[in-house]
Image 1 (tube, one colour):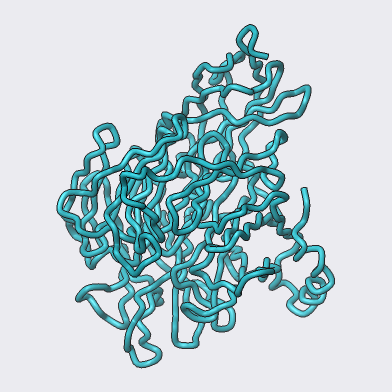
Image 2 (tube, helix red, strand yellow; image 1 turned 45 degrees about the vertical axis):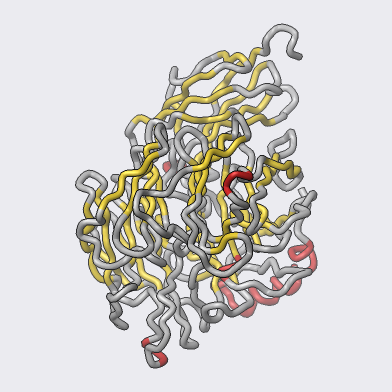
Length: 513
Protein backbone atom coordinates (compact mmCIF):
# COMPACT_ATOMS: atom_id res chain seq x y z
CA UNK A 1 0.00 0.00 0.00
CA UNK A 2 1.27 3.44 -0.88
CA UNK A 3 0.37 6.67 0.87
CA UNK A 4 -0.79 9.54 -1.26
CA UNK A 5 1.89 12.10 -1.89
CA UNK A 6 -0.31 14.65 -0.10
CA UNK A 7 0.05 12.77 3.17
CA UNK A 8 3.79 12.34 2.81
CA UNK A 9 4.51 15.92 1.85
CA UNK A 10 2.27 17.57 4.41
CA UNK A 11 2.98 15.74 7.66
CA UNK A 12 4.80 18.77 9.07
CA UNK A 13 1.98 21.07 7.97
CA UNK A 14 -0.58 18.79 9.59
CA UNK A 15 1.37 18.76 12.86
CA UNK A 16 1.49 22.56 12.88
CA UNK A 17 -2.24 22.77 12.15
CA UNK A 18 -2.99 20.33 14.96
CA UNK A 19 -1.15 22.55 17.41
CA UNK A 20 -3.11 25.58 16.23
CA UNK A 21 -6.53 23.92 16.25
CA UNK A 22 -6.09 21.58 19.20
CA UNK A 23 -9.07 19.27 19.63
CA UNK A 24 -10.78 20.58 16.51
CA UNK A 25 -8.59 18.49 14.24
CA UNK A 26 -8.94 14.75 13.91
CA UNK A 27 -5.87 12.56 14.30
CA UNK A 28 -4.24 9.61 12.53
CA UNK A 29 -6.15 9.83 9.31
CA UNK A 30 -4.50 8.95 6.04
CA UNK A 31 -5.25 9.39 2.36
CA UNK A 32 -4.14 6.67 -0.03
CA UNK A 33 -3.94 6.80 -3.80
CA UNK A 34 -4.25 3.97 -6.29
CA UNK A 35 -1.07 2.38 -7.56
CA UNK A 36 -2.79 1.99 -10.93
CA UNK A 37 -5.04 5.05 -11.30
CA UNK A 38 -7.69 5.12 -14.02
CA UNK A 39 -6.84 6.45 -17.45
CA UNK A 40 -10.31 7.96 -17.73
CA UNK A 41 -12.29 10.68 -15.96
CA UNK A 42 -14.37 9.21 -13.17
CA UNK A 43 -17.98 9.63 -12.14
CA UNK A 44 -19.99 7.67 -9.59
CA UNK A 45 -18.72 4.45 -7.98
CA UNK A 46 -20.91 1.54 -6.88
CA UNK A 47 -19.95 -1.52 -4.83
CA UNK A 48 -20.71 -4.75 -6.69
CA UNK A 49 -21.58 -7.74 -4.53
CA UNK A 50 -18.61 -9.74 -5.85
CA UNK A 51 -16.10 -7.30 -4.34
CA UNK A 52 -15.39 -5.29 -7.47
CA UNK A 53 -16.08 -1.55 -7.56
CA UNK A 54 -18.01 -0.33 -10.59
CA UNK A 55 -17.06 3.16 -11.80
CA UNK A 56 -18.66 5.20 -14.57
CA UNK A 57 -16.44 6.98 -17.04
CA UNK A 58 -18.00 10.34 -16.30
CA UNK A 59 -20.71 11.53 -18.67
CA UNK A 60 -20.23 8.61 -21.08
CA UNK A 61 -21.78 5.20 -21.76
CA UNK A 62 -18.62 3.45 -20.52
CA UNK A 63 -18.14 1.62 -17.23
CA UNK A 64 -15.12 0.07 -15.51
CA UNK A 65 -14.48 -2.26 -12.58
CA UNK A 66 -11.73 -1.78 -10.01
CA UNK A 67 -10.58 -5.30 -9.10
CA UNK A 68 -8.62 -5.63 -5.82
CA UNK A 69 -5.30 -7.45 -5.81
CA UNK A 70 -4.94 -11.04 -4.58
CA UNK A 71 -4.75 -9.83 -0.96
CA UNK A 72 -8.00 -7.88 -1.30
CA UNK A 73 -6.21 -4.51 -1.42
CA UNK A 74 -7.98 -1.93 -3.56
CA UNK A 75 -5.03 0.47 -3.54
CA UNK A 76 -3.12 -2.02 -5.68
CA UNK A 77 -6.12 -3.02 -7.79
CA UNK A 78 -6.52 -2.79 -11.54
CA UNK A 79 -9.27 -1.27 -13.69
CA UNK A 80 -10.85 -3.52 -16.31
CA UNK A 81 -13.54 -2.44 -18.80
CA UNK A 82 -17.16 -3.47 -18.38
CA UNK A 83 -19.88 -3.48 -21.01
CA UNK A 84 -21.07 0.01 -21.99
CA UNK A 85 -24.72 0.95 -22.24
CA UNK A 86 -26.32 -0.75 -25.27
CA UNK A 87 -25.91 1.02 -28.59
CA UNK A 88 -29.68 0.71 -29.02
CA UNK A 89 -30.17 3.30 -26.28
CA UNK A 90 -29.09 6.03 -28.70
CA UNK A 91 -25.77 6.91 -27.12
CA UNK A 92 -27.02 7.06 -23.52
CA UNK A 93 -24.33 9.08 -21.68
CA UNK A 94 -25.95 10.20 -18.43
CA UNK A 95 -24.65 12.71 -15.93
CA UNK A 96 -26.35 13.08 -12.49
CA UNK A 97 -28.77 10.17 -12.25
CA UNK A 98 -30.49 7.72 -9.89
CA UNK A 99 -28.64 4.49 -9.08
CA UNK A 100 -28.69 1.49 -6.75
CA UNK A 101 -27.44 -2.04 -6.21
CA UNK A 102 -30.43 -4.38 -6.06
CA UNK A 103 -30.94 -7.46 -3.83
CA UNK A 104 -30.02 -9.82 -6.67
CA UNK A 105 -26.68 -8.05 -7.14
CA UNK A 106 -27.68 -6.22 -10.31
CA UNK A 107 -27.20 -2.46 -10.71
CA UNK A 108 -29.86 -0.01 -11.87
CA UNK A 109 -29.16 3.37 -13.45
CA UNK A 110 -32.08 5.66 -14.23
CA UNK A 111 -32.30 9.06 -15.89
CA UNK A 112 -29.70 11.77 -16.18
CA UNK A 113 -29.91 15.53 -15.84
CA UNK A 114 -27.57 15.76 -18.82
CA UNK A 115 -27.09 13.22 -21.58
CA UNK A 116 -24.30 13.25 -24.13
CA UNK A 117 -22.58 16.44 -23.04
CA UNK A 118 -25.28 18.88 -24.18
CA UNK A 119 -27.60 21.03 -22.11
CA UNK A 120 -30.05 19.77 -19.49
CA UNK A 121 -32.44 17.14 -20.84
CA UNK A 122 -33.67 15.21 -17.75
CA UNK A 123 -33.71 12.02 -19.81
CA UNK A 124 -36.04 9.13 -19.03
CA UNK A 125 -33.60 6.48 -20.27
CA UNK A 126 -32.38 3.81 -17.88
CA UNK A 127 -30.95 0.29 -17.71
CA UNK A 128 -30.06 -2.60 -15.39
CA UNK A 129 -26.59 -4.15 -15.37
CA UNK A 130 -26.11 -7.89 -14.83
CA UNK A 131 -22.58 -8.51 -13.46
CA UNK A 132 -22.81 -12.23 -14.23
CA UNK A 133 -23.37 -11.78 -17.96
CA UNK A 134 -21.73 -8.33 -18.20
CA UNK A 135 -24.77 -7.02 -20.05
CA UNK A 136 -27.23 -4.14 -19.74
CA UNK A 137 -30.99 -4.37 -20.23
CA UNK A 138 -32.90 -1.21 -21.05
CA UNK A 139 -35.72 -0.23 -18.67
CA UNK A 140 -38.70 1.80 -19.90
CA UNK A 141 -39.62 4.83 -17.78
CA UNK A 142 -42.60 4.86 -15.43
CA UNK A 143 -45.86 5.39 -17.34
CA UNK A 144 -46.60 9.05 -18.04
CA UNK A 145 -43.23 10.34 -16.84
CA UNK A 146 -41.61 12.81 -19.21
CA UNK A 147 -38.53 13.43 -17.05
CA UNK A 148 -36.35 11.48 -14.64
CA UNK A 149 -33.12 13.44 -14.70
CA UNK A 150 -31.32 13.70 -11.36
CA UNK A 151 -34.02 11.90 -9.37
CA UNK A 152 -33.50 10.55 -5.89
CA UNK A 153 -34.08 6.86 -5.21
CA UNK A 154 -33.88 4.24 -2.47
CA UNK A 155 -34.12 0.48 -2.14
CA UNK A 156 -36.83 -0.22 0.42
CA UNK A 157 -36.57 -2.85 3.16
CA UNK A 158 -38.35 -5.42 0.98
CA UNK A 159 -35.84 -4.90 -1.85
CA UNK A 160 -38.07 -2.79 -4.09
CA UNK A 161 -36.44 0.08 -5.95
CA UNK A 162 -38.31 3.36 -5.36
CA UNK A 163 -37.68 6.44 -7.51
CA UNK A 164 -39.00 10.01 -7.30
CA UNK A 165 -40.76 12.08 -9.94
CA UNK A 166 -38.81 15.35 -9.78
CA UNK A 167 -41.75 17.38 -11.15
CA UNK A 168 -44.21 16.61 -8.35
CA UNK A 169 -44.78 14.35 -5.35
CA UNK A 170 -45.20 11.12 -7.32
CA UNK A 171 -42.95 8.12 -6.96
CA UNK A 172 -42.67 4.81 -8.78
CA UNK A 173 -41.88 1.26 -7.62
CA UNK A 174 -40.08 -1.14 -9.96
CA UNK A 175 -41.13 -4.75 -10.45
CA UNK A 176 -37.74 -6.09 -11.46
CA UNK A 177 -39.13 -9.41 -12.67
CA UNK A 178 -41.21 -7.71 -15.38
CA UNK A 179 -39.24 -4.44 -15.61
CA UNK A 180 -42.47 -2.52 -15.14
CA UNK A 181 -43.33 0.34 -12.82
CA UNK A 182 -46.26 1.15 -10.59
CA UNK A 183 -46.74 4.89 -10.14
CA UNK A 184 -48.13 6.27 -6.87
CA UNK A 185 -49.47 9.80 -6.43
CA UNK A 186 -47.32 10.62 -3.40
CA UNK A 187 -50.29 10.90 -1.07
CA UNK A 188 -49.58 13.40 1.70
CA UNK A 189 -46.40 14.75 0.09
CA UNK A 190 -46.03 18.42 1.01
CA UNK A 191 -44.02 19.60 -2.00
CA UNK A 192 -42.32 18.31 -5.16
CA UNK A 193 -39.49 15.80 -4.83
CA UNK A 194 -36.87 17.73 -6.79
CA UNK A 195 -33.50 18.35 -5.04
CA UNK A 196 -34.49 16.30 -1.99
CA UNK A 197 -32.62 13.27 -0.67
CA UNK A 198 -34.06 10.09 0.82
CA UNK A 199 -32.63 8.43 3.94
CA UNK A 200 -33.67 4.88 4.85
CA UNK A 201 -34.48 4.62 8.56
CA UNK A 202 -34.54 1.66 10.95
CA UNK A 203 -37.98 0.11 10.66
CA UNK A 204 -38.29 0.81 6.94
CA UNK A 205 -39.56 4.37 6.74
CA UNK A 206 -37.83 7.01 4.61
CA UNK A 207 -36.89 10.52 5.75
CA UNK A 208 -36.65 13.61 3.53
CA UNK A 209 -36.14 17.34 4.09
CA UNK A 210 -38.41 19.52 1.94
CA UNK A 211 -36.88 21.94 -0.57
CA UNK A 212 -40.06 23.95 -1.30
CA UNK A 213 -39.98 23.68 -5.09
CA UNK A 214 -42.64 24.34 -7.73
CA UNK A 215 -45.08 26.66 -6.05
CA UNK A 216 -44.18 25.90 -2.45
CA UNK A 217 -41.69 28.75 -1.97
CA UNK A 218 -41.38 29.76 1.66
CA UNK A 219 -38.01 31.40 2.33
CA UNK A 220 -38.24 30.30 5.97
CA UNK A 221 -39.47 26.73 5.36
CA UNK A 222 -38.16 24.01 7.63
CA UNK A 223 -40.51 21.09 7.03
CA UNK A 224 -39.41 17.46 6.83
CA UNK A 225 -41.39 14.36 5.90
CA UNK A 226 -41.56 10.62 6.52
CA UNK A 227 -42.63 8.03 3.95
CA UNK A 228 -44.42 4.94 5.25
CA UNK A 229 -44.07 2.06 2.74
CA UNK A 230 -46.85 0.11 4.44
CA UNK A 231 -49.46 2.78 3.74
CA UNK A 232 -47.70 4.37 0.74
CA UNK A 233 -48.19 7.79 2.30
CA UNK A 234 -46.11 10.77 3.40
CA UNK A 235 -46.58 12.70 6.62
CA UNK A 236 -44.76 15.54 8.34
CA UNK A 237 -41.66 14.68 10.36
CA UNK A 238 -41.65 18.12 11.95
CA UNK A 239 -39.49 21.20 11.73
CA UNK A 240 -35.76 20.82 11.19
CA UNK A 241 -35.37 23.80 13.60
CA UNK A 242 -32.86 25.46 11.26
CA UNK A 243 -33.25 25.82 7.52
CA UNK A 244 -31.29 23.33 5.46
CA UNK A 245 -32.29 24.13 1.88
CA UNK A 246 -30.92 27.24 0.17
CA UNK A 247 -33.67 29.88 -0.17
CA UNK A 248 -31.19 32.79 -0.20
CA UNK A 249 -33.30 34.44 2.52
CA UNK A 250 -30.11 35.90 4.02
CA UNK A 251 -29.37 37.86 0.84
CA UNK A 252 -32.73 39.03 -0.45
CA UNK A 253 -34.37 35.75 -1.41
CA UNK A 254 -33.76 36.15 -5.14
CA UNK A 255 -32.99 33.12 -7.31
CA UNK A 256 -32.98 30.45 -4.59
CA UNK A 257 -31.04 27.33 -5.57
CA UNK A 258 -33.23 25.01 -3.43
CA UNK A 259 -30.10 22.88 -2.94
CA UNK A 260 -29.22 21.11 0.28
CA UNK A 261 -26.68 18.55 1.42
CA UNK A 262 -26.82 14.84 2.23
CA UNK A 263 -28.40 13.26 5.32
CA UNK A 264 -26.63 10.25 6.84
CA UNK A 265 -27.96 7.84 9.46
CA UNK A 266 -25.38 7.21 12.18
CA UNK A 267 -25.02 4.02 14.28
CA UNK A 268 -26.59 5.80 17.28
CA UNK A 269 -29.92 5.98 15.44
CA UNK A 270 -29.68 9.67 14.62
CA UNK A 271 -29.66 11.25 11.16
CA UNK A 272 -27.11 13.98 10.52
CA UNK A 273 -28.63 16.31 7.88
CA UNK A 274 -26.56 19.02 6.20
CA UNK A 275 -27.54 22.34 4.69
CA UNK A 276 -26.65 24.85 1.99
CA UNK A 277 -26.24 28.63 2.00
CA UNK A 278 -25.20 30.80 -0.94
CA UNK A 279 -25.17 34.09 0.98
CA UNK A 280 -21.64 34.06 2.36
CA UNK A 281 -22.72 32.42 5.60
CA UNK A 282 -22.16 28.90 6.91
CA UNK A 283 -24.61 26.14 6.13
CA UNK A 284 -26.71 24.84 9.01
CA UNK A 285 -27.01 21.23 10.13
CA UNK A 286 -29.75 19.40 12.01
CA UNK A 287 -30.00 16.06 13.79
CA UNK A 288 -33.07 13.82 13.65
CA UNK A 289 -33.58 11.28 16.45
CA UNK A 290 -35.31 8.25 14.94
CA UNK A 291 -36.43 6.97 18.36
CA UNK A 292 -38.18 10.17 19.42
CA UNK A 293 -39.07 11.58 16.00
CA UNK A 294 -37.63 14.95 17.02
CA UNK A 295 -35.17 17.33 15.40
CA UNK A 296 -32.55 19.46 17.11
CA UNK A 297 -30.14 22.03 15.78
CA UNK A 298 -26.66 20.79 14.91
CA UNK A 299 -23.49 22.87 14.67
CA UNK A 300 -23.04 25.24 11.74
CA UNK A 301 -20.24 24.40 9.36
CA UNK A 302 -16.95 26.22 10.05
CA UNK A 303 -16.33 29.57 8.35
CA UNK A 304 -18.63 30.01 5.37
CA UNK A 305 -18.64 26.33 4.39
CA UNK A 306 -21.80 24.50 3.35
CA UNK A 307 -22.92 21.49 1.34
CA UNK A 308 -25.09 22.19 -1.67
CA UNK A 309 -25.42 19.04 -3.75
CA UNK A 310 -22.46 17.21 -2.26
CA UNK A 311 -21.35 13.92 -0.72
CA UNK A 312 -21.03 12.55 2.79
CA UNK A 313 -20.29 9.09 4.13
CA UNK A 314 -20.45 7.15 7.34
CA UNK A 315 -17.06 6.03 8.68
CA UNK A 316 -16.40 2.81 10.63
CA UNK A 317 -15.89 4.86 13.82
CA UNK A 318 -19.42 6.28 13.48
CA UNK A 319 -18.29 9.74 12.39
CA UNK A 320 -19.56 11.29 9.15
CA UNK A 321 -17.09 12.38 6.48
CA UNK A 322 -18.41 15.54 4.78
CA UNK A 323 -17.23 17.48 1.74
CA UNK A 324 -17.95 21.22 2.07
CA UNK A 325 -17.53 24.32 -0.11
CA UNK A 326 -17.36 28.08 0.62
CA UNK A 327 -20.77 28.69 -0.95
CA UNK A 328 -22.71 26.86 -3.65
CA UNK A 329 -20.60 26.22 -6.75
CA UNK A 330 -17.43 27.67 -5.23
CA UNK A 331 -14.16 25.90 -4.60
CA UNK A 332 -12.03 24.53 -3.24
CA UNK A 333 -13.81 21.98 -1.11
CA UNK A 334 -12.77 21.23 2.46
CA UNK A 335 -13.36 17.92 4.22
CA UNK A 336 -14.28 17.33 7.85
CA UNK A 337 -15.31 14.51 10.14
CA UNK A 338 -18.42 15.17 12.20
CA UNK A 339 -18.11 13.25 15.47
CA UNK A 340 -21.64 13.88 16.72
CA UNK A 341 -20.72 17.12 18.45
CA UNK A 342 -18.32 19.11 16.30
CA UNK A 343 -16.39 19.17 13.04
CA UNK A 344 -12.86 17.80 13.02
CA UNK A 345 -10.79 19.19 10.17
CA UNK A 346 -8.81 16.62 8.22
CA UNK A 347 -5.99 16.93 5.68
CA UNK A 348 -7.19 17.62 2.17
CA UNK A 349 -6.40 15.47 -0.88
CA UNK A 350 -5.86 18.49 -3.09
CA UNK A 351 -6.03 17.83 -6.84
CA UNK A 352 -2.57 17.92 -8.33
CA UNK A 353 -3.33 18.32 -12.01
CA UNK A 354 -6.79 19.83 -12.21
CA UNK A 355 -8.75 22.86 -10.97
CA UNK A 356 -9.91 22.80 -7.34
CA UNK A 357 -13.28 21.12 -6.96
CA UNK A 358 -16.41 22.06 -5.04
CA UNK A 359 -18.87 19.71 -3.37
CA UNK A 360 -20.70 18.91 -6.61
CA UNK A 361 -17.46 17.43 -7.91
CA UNK A 362 -17.13 14.86 -5.13
CA UNK A 363 -18.50 11.33 -4.83
CA UNK A 364 -18.06 8.89 -1.94
CA UNK A 365 -18.37 5.14 -1.47
CA UNK A 366 -17.75 2.94 1.57
CA UNK A 367 -15.52 0.05 0.44
CA UNK A 368 -15.06 -3.36 2.13
CA UNK A 369 -11.80 -2.38 3.86
CA UNK A 370 -13.66 0.31 5.82
CA UNK A 371 -12.05 3.12 3.89
CA UNK A 372 -14.10 5.66 1.97
CA UNK A 373 -13.42 6.07 -1.72
CA UNK A 374 -13.48 9.76 -2.66
CA UNK A 375 -13.71 10.52 -6.38
CA UNK A 376 -13.08 13.87 -8.07
CA UNK A 377 -15.66 13.88 -10.85
CA UNK A 378 -14.50 14.47 -14.42
CA UNK A 379 -10.86 13.89 -13.49
CA UNK A 380 -8.90 10.61 -13.10
CA UNK A 381 -8.35 11.37 -9.40
CA UNK A 382 -9.43 8.84 -6.75
CA UNK A 383 -8.39 8.73 -3.10
CA UNK A 384 -9.09 6.30 -0.27
CA UNK A 385 -9.65 7.81 3.18
CA UNK A 386 -8.88 5.92 6.37
CA UNK A 387 -10.18 7.43 9.60
CA UNK A 388 -8.86 7.07 13.10
CA UNK A 389 -10.64 4.91 15.65
CA UNK A 390 -12.81 1.97 14.79
CA UNK A 391 -16.27 0.45 15.11
CA UNK A 392 -17.90 -0.74 18.30
CA UNK A 393 -18.34 -4.48 18.61
CA UNK A 394 -22.14 -4.10 18.78
CA UNK A 395 -22.14 -2.56 15.29
CA UNK A 396 -20.66 -5.63 13.62
CA UNK A 397 -22.55 -8.20 11.57
CA UNK A 398 -22.57 -11.57 13.31
CA UNK A 399 -22.55 -15.05 11.75
CA UNK A 400 -24.39 -17.38 14.10
CA UNK A 401 -23.19 -20.87 14.96
CA UNK A 402 -24.21 -23.58 12.48
CA UNK A 403 -25.57 -20.86 10.16
CA UNK A 404 -22.98 -21.39 7.42
CA UNK A 405 -21.59 -24.32 5.46
CA UNK A 406 -18.44 -26.01 6.74
CA UNK A 407 -17.42 -26.87 3.18
CA UNK A 408 -18.11 -25.05 -0.07
CA UNK A 409 -17.48 -26.13 -3.66
CA UNK A 410 -16.32 -23.64 -6.25
CA UNK A 411 -19.21 -22.80 -8.57
CA UNK A 412 -21.88 -23.68 -6.03
CA UNK A 413 -24.31 -21.48 -4.06
CA UNK A 414 -24.69 -21.46 -0.28
CA UNK A 415 -26.52 -19.56 2.45
CA UNK A 416 -25.06 -17.77 5.44
CA UNK A 417 -27.21 -16.36 8.25
CA UNK A 418 -26.79 -14.15 11.27
CA UNK A 419 -27.62 -10.64 12.41
CA UNK A 420 -27.01 -7.10 11.12
CA UNK A 421 -25.90 -8.28 7.68
CA UNK A 422 -27.00 -4.95 6.17
CA UNK A 423 -25.23 -2.71 8.64
CA UNK A 424 -26.66 0.19 10.61
CA UNK A 425 -26.89 2.72 7.77
CA UNK A 426 -26.97 3.03 3.99
CA UNK A 427 -23.33 4.15 3.95
CA UNK A 428 -22.65 7.11 1.67
CA UNK A 429 -25.14 9.74 0.49
CA UNK A 430 -25.44 12.77 -1.78
CA UNK A 431 -27.71 15.81 -1.90
CA UNK A 432 -30.20 14.13 -4.20
CA UNK A 433 -28.84 12.02 -7.07
CA UNK A 434 -25.60 9.95 -7.12
CA UNK A 435 -26.87 7.30 -4.69
CA UNK A 436 -24.17 4.77 -3.74
CA UNK A 437 -25.66 2.91 -0.76
CA UNK A 438 -23.91 -0.22 0.56
CA UNK A 439 -26.47 -1.61 3.01
CA UNK A 440 -26.07 -5.21 1.84
CA UNK A 441 -23.71 -8.04 2.86
CA UNK A 442 -20.49 -9.01 1.11
CA UNK A 443 -18.80 -12.38 1.72
CA UNK A 444 -15.01 -12.45 1.90
CA UNK A 445 -13.06 -15.71 1.81
CA UNK A 446 -9.38 -15.71 2.82
CA UNK A 447 -7.23 -18.75 2.17
CA UNK A 448 -5.48 -19.75 5.42
CA UNK A 449 -2.29 -20.90 3.68
CA UNK A 450 -1.66 -18.17 1.10
CA UNK A 451 -3.52 -15.26 2.71
CA UNK A 452 -5.12 -14.54 -0.64
CA UNK A 453 -8.56 -12.94 -0.52
CA UNK A 454 -11.53 -13.85 -2.70
CA UNK A 455 -15.00 -12.38 -2.68
CA UNK A 456 -18.01 -14.57 -3.28
CA UNK A 457 -20.94 -13.07 -5.19
CA UNK A 458 -23.76 -12.31 -2.76
CA UNK A 459 -27.44 -12.06 -3.67
CA UNK A 460 -30.94 -12.93 -2.48
CA UNK A 461 -30.66 -10.77 0.61
CA UNK A 462 -33.37 -11.55 3.14
CA UNK A 463 -33.85 -7.82 3.68
CA UNK A 464 -32.41 -4.45 2.70
CA UNK A 465 -33.34 -2.99 6.08
CA UNK A 466 -30.76 -1.17 8.19
CA UNK A 467 -30.13 -1.51 11.93
CA UNK A 468 -32.01 -4.82 12.20
CA UNK A 469 -30.59 -5.63 15.64
CA UNK A 470 -31.24 -9.20 16.76
CA UNK A 471 -33.57 -10.04 13.88
CA UNK A 472 -32.24 -12.89 11.70
CA UNK A 473 -30.75 -11.87 8.34
CA UNK A 474 -29.24 -13.94 5.57
CA UNK A 475 -27.90 -13.98 2.05
CA UNK A 476 -26.87 -16.47 -0.57
CA UNK A 477 -23.35 -16.50 -1.96
CA UNK A 478 -21.73 -18.06 -5.01
CA UNK A 479 -18.14 -19.28 -4.70
CA UNK A 480 -16.56 -17.88 -7.85
CA UNK A 481 -14.13 -19.62 -10.20
CA UNK A 482 -10.53 -18.89 -9.24
CA UNK A 483 -11.18 -19.13 -5.50
CA UNK A 484 -8.32 -21.13 -4.01
CA UNK A 485 -9.13 -24.46 -2.42
CA UNK A 486 -8.22 -25.36 1.14
CA UNK A 487 -8.88 -24.23 4.68
CA UNK A 488 -10.12 -20.65 4.72
CA UNK A 489 -11.77 -17.99 6.82
CA UNK A 490 -15.19 -16.57 5.91
CA UNK A 491 -16.36 -13.10 6.91
CA UNK A 492 -19.49 -11.07 6.18
CA UNK A 493 -18.91 -7.34 5.63
CA UNK A 494 -21.48 -4.54 5.77
CA UNK A 495 -20.51 -0.90 5.15
CA UNK A 496 -16.84 -1.74 5.66
CA UNK A 497 -17.38 -3.39 9.07
CA UNK A 498 -16.49 -7.11 9.27
CA UNK A 499 -18.33 -9.83 11.16
CA UNK A 500 -16.79 -12.51 13.32
CA UNK A 501 -14.68 -14.87 11.22
CA UNK A 502 -15.66 -18.55 10.85
CA UNK A 503 -13.73 -21.51 9.52
CA UNK A 504 -14.62 -22.65 6.02
CA UNK A 505 -13.11 -25.13 3.57
CA UNK A 506 -13.16 -24.46 -0.16
CA UNK A 507 -13.13 -27.43 -2.53
CA UNK A 508 -12.42 -27.03 -6.24
CA UNK A 509 -13.88 -29.34 -8.86
CA UNK A 510 -11.51 -32.09 -9.95
CA UNK A 511 -9.14 -30.87 -12.64
CA UNK A 512 -9.96 -27.18 -12.17
CA UNK A 513 -6.72 -26.30 -10.39
